[in-house]
Length: 250
Ligand SMILES: *C/C=C(C)/C=C/C=C(C)/C=C/C1=C(C)CCCC1(C)C
Image 1 (cartoon, rainbow, N blue to C red):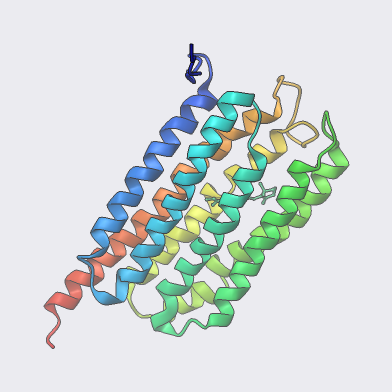
Image 2: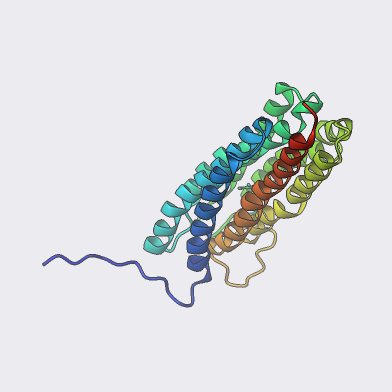
């Protein structure tokens, strides 16, 4: 007789809940962005495609992370960072696409991509190679190196080239959208290092009995906010600009 193993969600496991809701939310958002893309003005179709790809890549990783977590109770660190190394650079590409009309260069795009990959490579070393039980020096050194990449993106979005280009665009809708995305980077992205610091060895691990899989609660909530939120900001801008293009005399 063949017994199929059925994965069940323990009712006292909020981490498992967020893996399942996160998966479905990413999937639904992807379908939405892909379908809505076709009614946007040509200029905005690529940004919409990227929005859909960000949530779709996340959905596929959530599909695996969910099962990994249920089967092992462990933190799916490798899958998590593979997901992020694809999706976070794509979020940087959105900044480039939004400011391209105002003259954003490919160089700016690559600088943001490199900074985000830097942030994630050191974050991965900090998490995956932290010795059993947690080493504070390991957590702090790699957390610090990672933060340098984060600060670069944050600075560029708030005060550097991206902020300047948004202003130069003389388009209030673009300026506003870039500002909202900058808020996501400041507030939404900050959830990740806070989760990181709650892990064993981290500065905020103050003996609340946290094991390393608790960090997934932070990461899952932050991912839903940031990935779907980013996409919706781009969606709102694309709608506004599409309406404008329809009204403009040809
Ligand atoms: C969709 C996924 C996103 C937007 C992931 C963003 C991740 C971060 C901003 C992670 C930042 C980290 C630090 C700034 C220091 C500690 C290590 C990290 C990787 C958690």
